[in-house]
Image (cartoon, rainbow, N blue to C red; front, side, top):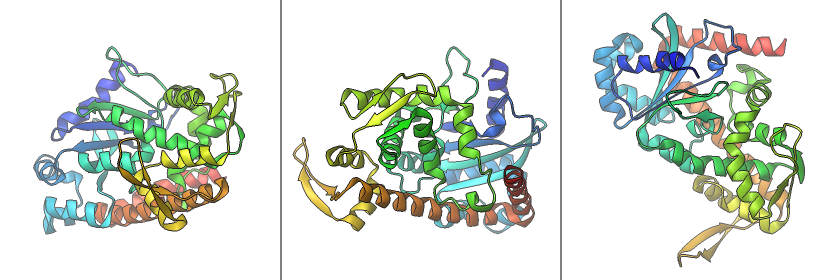
Length: 346
């Protein structure tokens, strides 16, 4: 991304209280996107959401629904996000510098836990898609996510999230597939069970994301693919092109290894369904291990767990969002989504 564009995106942060983390994402960042009316999406990570919203209400009261300001203020805002939603409060249809923005506010603890554990699998899914950090004051074009502020090295923490995403995708793929198949499977993980995909999202969303940013997916996951190659778990025929073919070992030991690389919350739910056994790890600690009877059984179980996790999170966030933005903005936001979905269907 050119310096001018980055400066333009960062300028919004001067209008809100300080943040520990900020990324922008979505189709509006794509240089080929001609829809100037679309919202730019921000995620703001803050150390204390209650305090942050208290300050932001003084600075930008008009960003919030009037009923929230009148009835409960920052306390009610955070309660709805935490107890009804998945820890994120969104303010959509915010006008800034002649642009329309939507920003979500999340506590840094919740953000990190979601990335490491997939307990809610909400923001972690967004960070599994391509992003680049600033290099000499510039960013690379054609990314799905731009990280603008990263005071706590979230990009490094995200490597755990990416490694787990690769393991989950490999578990769902056959013995032979293409790199494009792999990236599409990774991209689709966070959409499985998402209620919006039923009626309010572009049906070809995954395909567009992968094909439009294939090289960035490749760069992003290359180190983790090389790790698997070094362990003889898979082979990549000619990396670097969308025609590259990948073959993987689908034996039970490799399947167990892939399952062991999944986040704790997912393994715990799989263990409740498939059974668990205790094992002593290399550090002498007793850990629970999922009992795997076959690869098909493990893949099917993980898919069910992920689908349910995403479905619950998307439903909770939908209800939280409707309450947070009020009836008029909720109707407006849903209408925009439905319009995009209709275009993809027709």
